[in-house]
Image (cartoon, rainbow, N blue to C red):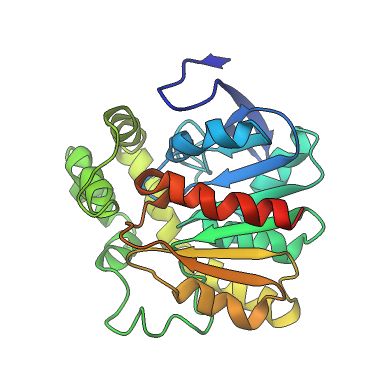
Length: 288
């Protein structure tokens, strides 16, 4: 199904791909080596709108809506990092891609790291940003005052979706404004995100990621205890996570580079897309 692209992005083909018991909505653009882009909360594949065009000149871009998000199946369960990593492996299988570079942010990052730990032969290079990897050592400074307030709010079964019903737009806009340090995001992308997170079931799926965090943390701990991350990895930080992700990765990763983007909010691909590309492209080429 063809998709009419907003400004600054390449023509995108939206596909329904059966994987791991769900139907994933996957944006595909360009040709060449595969590069997978994994969003977080509160995003959809449209998070990558400013990057898909430049990347599709060199790569086959594969940007799914993660399980439960956007137009992907709102599954009753499976929101742990291990199940989500299997979702992504299944998408690659369906598209005939044996290997891919993987780029991830926020909730997509534990998925990408676990995929690389469990299937190092499938992930050529890894770019991860603005996230924490469960309880792995290194994030103590970031967590000194406790985790962000919404982690606890979202984790209580049934609470947040009940309280927020009818107020989704204001809630999502708060994250988009805060995540760009007050600058906000393009109107069409903002509206797409709000639409994707409106309704009790959409909210339930989003908050299921937070309710699965203990399971995901255990999966990461177990994998890191027995396997080193051998995939060349670039960790990018901004505000507020900073270098916490790099510090978590450092003890378990063979080939790690870390960078901070100054004056950048949490939603790096929309707040500082050009700076992000300037970091990513040389890393991807140098490790090709």
